[in-house]
Amino acid sequence: DAMVIQNPRYQVTQFGKPVTLSCSQTLNHNVMYWYQQKSSQAPKLLFHYYDKDFNNEADTPDNFQSRRPNTSFCFLDIRSPGLGDAAMYLCATRRGDTQYFGPGTRLTVL
Amino acid sequence: SQQGEEDPQALSIQEGENATMNCSYKTSINNLQWYRQNSGRGLVHLILIRSNEREKHSGRLRVTLDTSKKSSSLLITASRAADTASYFCATDSTGGFKTIFGAGTRLFVKA
Image 1 (cartoon, each protein chain N blue to C red):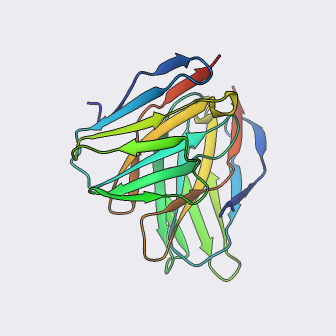
Image 2 (cartoon, rainbow over the protein chains, first blue to last red):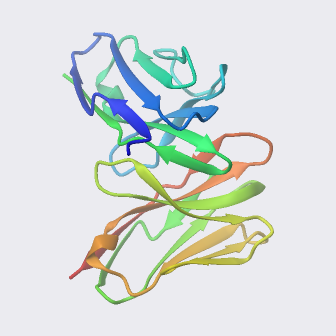
């Protein structure tokens, strides 16, 4: 059974056109994360939530925003995607010390 | 800056051989974890070792932790073609939920 679901799996957008990636979880975990992962690199933390308490990494560009309307859902909004934002975006939840990742959304920017 | 550094960056071995990957980190940690990522997929948690532990086993996996050297190693014994993936170490800094991943080792196991 899928526990962390990301939609869509593949997203194509145009330069400067806003895009929203979504994540949902069936685990009822308090902590959720968004990571950006570029080819052959480590996942880079963008934000994390503890319940609705939002934590933004200092080097996360202002172009990236996030919303968590309830425990189950979390969204990543990219206001004006640039070519450098093309990447895999990973959502994860956490229980205890273990993170549970979704399959990722691969974003292409044309 | 990135917390964990891993070596080697890439490793190619024959099926049945052992694979060893190393990870170094910079700050104090509560625990260190290893994750696996198949190409184009999300990460899967493999094993966690706490800062007061020195060695841990899970099936064909063996993890060591040396807090004095700020380093860890992951050993996969009797590797299989299905072990082909990227392996990442990850550390939690003390007092928070922030996890930092190393650059990863890309393992290729030839059948």
